[in-house]
Image (spheres, rainbow, N blue to C red):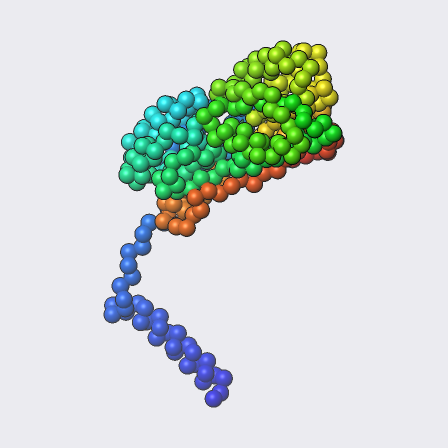
Length: 335
Ligand code: AHR
């Protein structure tokens, strides 16, 4: 068969196929479901509050990404009160314009009823930052840190800082006792602190992660356990810095007399690692908006198979990396 003949046959088949697709006898094309884009998204974002540098970076991530994507964002600062979060949930559930609700939970419990109401109202719900104990069937997915693993890292970092001091005494300054970040960082530390025989001398929690409460806790610990404290395990950078300020005010040298471990790896945390006063900083990633908005868009478009939890990617840093190296890293960071 000549080439021109076979080419004619191929073209004839292609044309007949195209005609068949257009003819009235072709199978009717079903009406396609609406395909949502970011511009269709109206997000009710229920933020915990503005308690830390981490929280400011998390809020910025949602504001900036919404602008980039053309998402309409409605924002609630809950002032670290769960009752404000419940009220905000009900407001967004009742708002016909809102099709997505994002929650950064103040507490780990107390959301079942509003989640059920949001589901019944056909709202997409994504949990960001902190896990909650509600059934994962009540929301699309949870995007946030493995705080237990962070606590494991914190214990290992403390053991490294206390090398050669088996059985060292450590005091804990926790975040808000109802928050999964505090609950799990405490749990994770206790899972691994026996590796170097750490003795937790005392453990107190700063309500709403308030650094002034954190400093009062450290002031009291230094008086009660004068000369017996070798380490401080603080659940975020603001609480670690408050402890450092208390240690310094007591005439001691943070980083030398008493080792300090914090969480978040914010710019302020880096500053205190560069001076050597903060011995280690376990990163907690606040830049979650791109992942959260993508998950919400998938939910609106009926994408299934989303995992119940998408753990954040995050690392850790230490004063032992050296001031110059830490300064170079800090220049590359967004918060
Ligand atoms: O959930 C993350 C925690 O919340 C951060 O470590 C802390 O700074 C914030 O309050």
